[in-house]
Figure 1 (cartoon, rainbow over the protein chains, first blue to last red):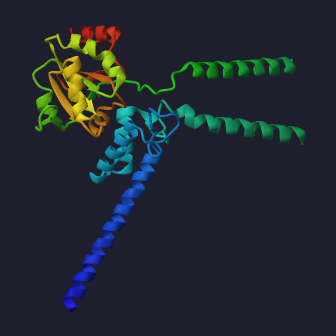
Figure 2: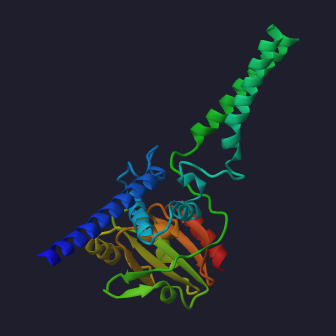
Figure 3: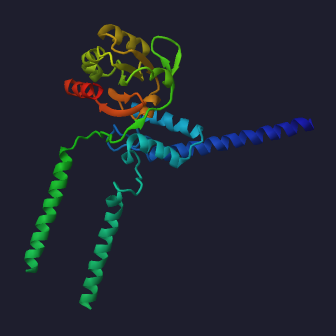
Length: 122
Length: 173
Protein backbone atom coordinates (compact mmCIF):
# COMPACT_ATOMS: atom_id res chain seq x y z
CA UNK A 1 0.00 0.00 0.00
CA UNK A 2 2.84 2.34 0.90
CA UNK A 3 4.60 1.53 -2.36
CA UNK A 4 1.39 2.21 -4.24
CA UNK A 5 1.10 5.63 -2.59
CA UNK A 6 4.67 6.50 -3.56
CA UNK A 7 4.03 5.47 -7.17
CA UNK A 8 0.82 7.49 -7.19
CA UNK A 9 2.63 10.59 -5.92
CA UNK A 10 5.40 10.19 -8.53
CA UNK A 11 2.84 9.61 -11.28
CA UNK A 12 0.80 12.69 -10.30
CA UNK A 13 3.96 14.81 -9.99
CA UNK A 14 5.10 13.98 -13.55
CA UNK A 15 1.53 14.25 -14.84
CA UNK A 16 1.15 17.78 -13.46
CA UNK A 17 4.60 18.73 -14.73
CA UNK A 18 3.57 17.62 -18.22
CA UNK A 19 0.34 19.62 -17.95
CA UNK A 20 2.28 22.69 -16.84
CA UNK A 21 4.69 22.32 -19.75
CA UNK A 22 1.80 21.93 -22.24
CA UNK A 23 0.17 25.06 -20.81
CA UNK A 24 3.45 26.96 -21.14
CA UNK A 25 3.81 25.89 -24.79
CA UNK A 26 0.18 26.81 -25.46
CA UNK A 27 0.74 30.32 -24.05
CA UNK A 28 3.95 30.73 -26.05
CA UNK A 29 2.23 29.55 -29.23
CA UNK A 30 -0.63 32.03 -28.75
CA UNK A 31 1.80 34.85 -28.01
CA UNK A 32 3.74 34.12 -31.22
CA UNK A 33 0.62 33.68 -33.37
CA UNK A 34 -0.79 37.01 -32.15
CA UNK A 35 2.43 38.69 -33.26
CA UNK A 36 2.39 37.21 -36.80
CA UNK A 37 0.53 38.99 -39.56
CA UNK A 38 -1.73 36.90 -41.81
CA UNK A 39 -0.29 37.95 -45.17
CA UNK A 40 -3.36 37.10 -47.21
CA UNK A 41 -5.92 38.61 -44.81
CA UNK A 42 -7.01 42.18 -44.25
CA UNK A 43 -5.65 43.40 -40.92
CA UNK A 44 -5.78 40.05 -39.13
CA UNK A 45 -3.16 38.20 -37.18
CA UNK A 46 -2.51 34.51 -37.82
CA UNK A 47 -4.11 33.85 -34.40
CA UNK A 48 -7.39 35.44 -35.52
CA UNK A 49 -7.49 33.95 -39.00
CA UNK A 50 -8.82 30.62 -40.25
CA UNK A 51 -7.35 30.97 -43.76
CA UNK A 52 -5.25 28.17 -45.30
CA UNK A 53 -2.13 30.28 -44.90
CA UNK A 54 -2.83 30.94 -41.21
CA UNK A 55 -3.70 27.30 -40.53
CA UNK A 56 -0.40 26.16 -42.09
CA UNK A 57 1.57 28.79 -40.15
CA UNK A 58 -0.07 27.58 -36.91
CA UNK A 59 1.10 24.03 -37.67
CA UNK A 60 4.62 25.24 -38.50
CA UNK A 61 4.83 27.26 -35.26
CA UNK A 62 3.60 24.19 -33.33
CA UNK A 63 6.31 22.09 -34.99
CA UNK A 64 9.02 24.66 -34.25
CA UNK A 65 7.97 24.86 -30.57
CA UNK A 66 8.13 21.05 -30.40
CA UNK A 67 11.64 21.27 -31.89
CA UNK A 68 12.49 23.54 -28.90
CA UNK A 69 13.08 26.67 -30.97
CA UNK A 70 12.86 29.89 -28.97
CA UNK A 71 10.34 32.64 -29.69
CA UNK A 72 13.05 34.77 -31.35
CA UNK A 73 14.25 31.83 -33.49
CA UNK A 74 10.70 31.26 -34.74
CA UNK A 75 10.35 34.96 -35.64
CA UNK A 76 13.73 34.79 -37.41
CA UNK A 77 12.60 31.76 -39.40
CA UNK A 78 9.44 33.57 -40.52
CA UNK A 79 11.34 36.79 -41.22
CA UNK A 80 13.73 34.89 -43.47
CA UNK A 81 10.81 33.43 -45.43
CA UNK A 82 8.48 36.43 -45.58
CA UNK A 83 10.42 39.53 -44.56
CA UNK A 84 9.95 41.95 -41.66
CA UNK A 85 6.34 42.64 -42.60
CA UNK A 86 5.19 39.26 -41.28
CA UNK A 87 5.97 40.28 -37.68
CA UNK A 88 3.78 42.93 -36.04
CA UNK A 89 6.66 44.05 -33.86
CA UNK A 90 9.46 44.72 -36.38
CA UNK A 91 13.17 44.85 -35.52
CA UNK A 92 15.13 48.08 -35.82
CA UNK A 93 17.04 47.87 -39.11
CA UNK A 94 17.68 49.95 -42.23
CA UNK A 95 14.17 49.27 -43.55
CA UNK A 96 12.36 50.12 -40.32
CA UNK A 97 14.41 52.88 -38.71
CA UNK A 98 12.02 55.60 -39.98
CA UNK A 99 9.13 53.70 -38.41
CA UNK A 100 10.92 53.63 -35.04
CA UNK A 101 12.57 57.06 -35.11
CA UNK A 102 9.80 59.19 -36.63
CA UNK A 103 7.57 59.20 -33.51
CA UNK A 104 10.61 60.10 -31.38
CA UNK A 105 11.57 62.90 -33.76
CA UNK A 106 8.01 64.24 -33.87
CA UNK A 107 7.79 64.04 -30.09
CA UNK A 108 11.10 65.90 -29.69
CA UNK A 109 10.06 68.51 -32.24
CA UNK A 110 6.71 69.04 -30.49
CA UNK A 111 8.47 69.27 -27.13
CA UNK A 112 10.99 71.77 -28.50
CA UNK A 113 8.19 73.95 -29.90
CA UNK A 114 6.29 73.89 -26.60
CA UNK A 115 9.43 74.71 -24.57
CA UNK A 116 10.40 77.48 -26.97
CA UNK A 117 6.92 79.00 -26.83
CA UNK A 118 6.78 78.79 -23.03
CA UNK A 119 10.20 80.40 -22.59
CA UNK A 120 9.37 83.03 -25.21
CA UNK A 121 6.10 83.84 -23.38
CA UNK A 122 7.86 84.18 -20.04
CA UNK B 1 6.88 86.94 -44.19
CA UNK B 2 5.91 84.58 -41.36
CA UNK B 3 2.39 84.17 -42.77
CA UNK B 4 3.80 83.35 -46.18
CA UNK B 5 6.09 80.74 -44.65
CA UNK B 6 3.18 79.18 -42.72
CA UNK B 7 1.06 79.10 -45.86
CA UNK B 8 3.84 77.49 -47.88
CA UNK B 9 4.52 74.97 -45.10
CA UNK B 10 0.81 74.07 -44.82
CA UNK B 11 0.56 73.75 -48.58
CA UNK B 12 3.59 71.45 -48.73
CA UNK B 13 2.33 69.38 -45.79
CA UNK B 14 -1.12 68.89 -47.33
CA UNK B 15 0.51 68.06 -50.68
CA UNK B 16 2.76 65.48 -48.99
CA UNK B 17 -0.18 63.85 -47.17
CA UNK B 18 -2.25 63.81 -50.36
CA UNK B 19 0.57 62.14 -52.32
CA UNK B 20 1.14 59.50 -49.62
CA UNK B 21 -2.55 58.60 -49.34
CA UNK B 22 -3.11 58.72 -53.10
CA UNK B 23 -0.21 56.34 -53.67
CA UNK B 24 -1.49 54.13 -50.85
CA UNK B 25 -4.93 53.91 -52.46
CA UNK B 26 -3.38 52.66 -55.69
CA UNK B 27 -1.42 49.92 -53.94
CA UNK B 28 -2.92 46.43 -54.11
CA UNK B 29 -4.57 45.19 -50.91
CA UNK B 30 -2.75 41.88 -50.89
CA UNK B 31 0.82 41.67 -49.73
CA UNK B 32 3.37 40.53 -52.28
CA UNK B 33 6.65 39.63 -50.61
CA UNK B 34 9.83 41.10 -51.98
CA UNK B 35 12.21 38.54 -53.32
CA UNK B 36 15.63 40.10 -53.51
CA UNK B 37 18.11 37.40 -52.60
CA UNK B 38 18.67 33.73 -53.31
CA UNK B 39 17.46 31.31 -50.67
CA UNK B 40 18.32 27.69 -50.10
CA UNK B 41 15.42 25.26 -50.46
CA UNK B 42 14.27 23.51 -47.27
CA UNK B 43 15.20 19.91 -46.54
CA UNK B 44 12.07 17.78 -46.52
CA UNK B 45 10.64 14.29 -46.67
CA UNK B 46 7.16 14.09 -48.24
CA UNK B 47 4.72 11.67 -49.79
CA UNK B 48 4.83 11.28 -53.55
CA UNK B 49 1.63 11.87 -55.50
CA UNK B 50 0.07 8.63 -56.75
CA UNK B 51 1.99 6.37 -54.39
CA UNK B 52 2.44 5.93 -50.68
CA UNK B 53 6.21 6.31 -50.86
CA UNK B 54 8.04 9.04 -49.05
CA UNK B 55 10.77 10.90 -50.90
CA UNK B 56 13.35 13.36 -49.63
CA UNK B 57 14.48 16.65 -51.13
CA UNK B 58 17.87 15.27 -52.20
CA UNK B 59 16.18 12.74 -54.47
CA UNK B 60 13.69 15.26 -55.85
CA UNK B 61 16.23 17.95 -56.71
CA UNK B 62 18.76 15.81 -58.54
CA UNK B 63 19.99 15.49 -62.11
CA UNK B 64 18.92 18.77 -63.66
CA UNK B 65 20.34 22.26 -64.09
CA UNK B 66 17.06 23.96 -63.27
CA UNK B 67 14.00 22.91 -61.35
CA UNK B 68 10.61 24.58 -61.47
CA UNK B 69 8.50 23.98 -58.38
CA UNK B 70 4.84 24.76 -58.92
CA UNK B 71 2.45 24.83 -55.97
CA UNK B 72 -1.04 23.87 -57.14
CA UNK B 73 -4.41 22.57 -55.99
CA UNK B 74 -7.49 21.26 -57.77
CA UNK B 75 -9.72 23.72 -55.88
CA UNK B 76 -7.71 26.73 -57.04
CA UNK B 77 -9.23 28.47 -60.09
CA UNK B 78 -6.05 30.34 -61.14
CA UNK B 79 -4.27 26.94 -61.27
CA UNK B 80 -6.58 25.97 -64.16
CA UNK B 81 -5.71 29.26 -65.83
CA UNK B 82 -1.96 28.57 -65.68
CA UNK B 83 -2.18 24.88 -66.57
CA UNK B 84 -1.78 25.26 -70.38
CA UNK B 85 1.38 27.33 -69.77
CA UNK B 86 2.76 24.62 -67.48
CA UNK B 87 2.01 22.04 -70.16
CA UNK B 88 4.04 24.12 -72.57
CA UNK B 89 6.85 24.51 -70.05
CA UNK B 90 6.94 20.74 -69.49
CA UNK B 91 8.09 20.27 -73.12
CA UNK B 92 11.39 21.89 -72.16
CA UNK B 93 13.91 19.09 -71.63
CA UNK B 94 16.45 21.18 -69.71
CA UNK B 95 14.24 21.58 -66.66
CA UNK B 96 12.52 19.36 -64.16
CA UNK B 97 9.00 20.54 -63.40
CA UNK B 98 7.96 19.52 -59.90
CA UNK B 99 4.42 19.87 -58.61
CA UNK B 100 3.51 20.43 -54.98
CA UNK B 101 -0.13 19.60 -54.37
CA UNK B 102 -1.26 22.01 -51.63
CA UNK B 103 -3.96 21.17 -49.04
CA UNK B 104 -6.00 19.20 -51.50
CA UNK B 105 -8.32 16.24 -51.68
CA UNK B 106 -6.23 13.54 -53.35
CA UNK B 107 -9.10 12.20 -55.49
CA UNK B 108 -9.92 15.68 -56.78
CA UNK B 109 -6.23 16.28 -57.49
CA UNK B 110 -6.03 13.03 -59.50
CA UNK B 111 -9.17 14.00 -61.45
CA UNK B 112 -7.62 17.42 -62.15
CA UNK B 113 -4.42 15.90 -63.56
CA UNK B 114 -6.36 13.31 -65.61
CA UNK B 115 -8.63 15.98 -67.06
CA UNK B 116 -6.12 18.71 -67.87
CA UNK B 117 -2.93 16.66 -68.33
CA UNK B 118 0.09 16.10 -66.12
CA UNK B 119 2.89 18.59 -66.78
CA UNK B 120 4.97 17.44 -63.80
CA UNK B 121 7.99 15.15 -63.87
CA UNK B 122 7.37 14.54 -60.20
CA UNK B 123 4.45 15.46 -58.00
CA UNK B 124 4.56 15.80 -54.23
CA UNK B 125 1.85 16.05 -51.60
CA UNK B 126 1.71 18.85 -49.04
CA UNK B 127 -1.54 17.97 -47.31
CA UNK B 128 -1.19 20.37 -44.37
CA UNK B 129 0.53 23.23 -46.25
CA UNK B 130 3.60 23.26 -44.01
CA UNK B 131 6.08 22.50 -46.80
CA UNK B 132 4.75 25.46 -48.79
CA UNK B 133 5.41 27.63 -45.71
CA UNK B 134 8.98 26.24 -45.52
CA UNK B 135 9.42 27.39 -49.12
CA UNK B 136 8.08 30.86 -48.21
CA UNK B 137 4.85 30.55 -50.18
CA UNK B 138 1.61 32.08 -49.00
CA UNK B 139 -0.92 30.62 -51.36
CA UNK B 140 -1.64 28.87 -54.63
CA UNK B 141 -0.56 29.04 -57.35
CA UNK B 142 3.05 29.94 -56.76
CA UNK B 143 6.10 28.98 -58.80
CA UNK B 144 9.77 28.83 -57.83
CA UNK B 145 12.76 28.64 -60.15
CA UNK B 146 15.54 26.67 -58.45
CA UNK B 147 19.07 26.24 -59.77
CA UNK B 148 21.32 23.17 -59.59
CA UNK B 149 22.79 24.41 -56.28
CA UNK B 150 19.28 24.11 -54.82
CA UNK B 151 18.91 27.87 -54.46
CA UNK B 152 15.59 29.58 -55.19
CA UNK B 153 16.54 32.19 -57.78
CA UNK B 154 13.09 33.45 -58.73
CA UNK B 155 9.62 33.32 -57.27
CA UNK B 156 6.37 33.95 -59.16
CA UNK B 157 3.30 34.71 -57.12
CA UNK B 158 0.01 33.97 -58.89
CA UNK B 159 -0.70 32.05 -62.07
CA UNK B 160 1.92 31.59 -64.78
CA UNK B 161 1.04 33.52 -67.92
CA UNK B 162 2.75 34.19 -71.22
CA UNK B 163 4.91 36.98 -69.74
CA UNK B 164 6.06 34.88 -66.77
CA UNK B 165 6.69 31.90 -69.04
CA UNK B 166 8.95 34.07 -71.21
CA UNK B 167 10.79 35.20 -68.08
CA UNK B 168 11.29 31.58 -66.96
CA UNK B 169 12.56 30.61 -70.40
CA UNK B 170 15.02 33.51 -70.29
CA UNK B 171 16.36 32.33 -66.93
CA UNK B 172 16.77 28.69 -67.91
CA UNK B 173 18.15 29.07 -71.43
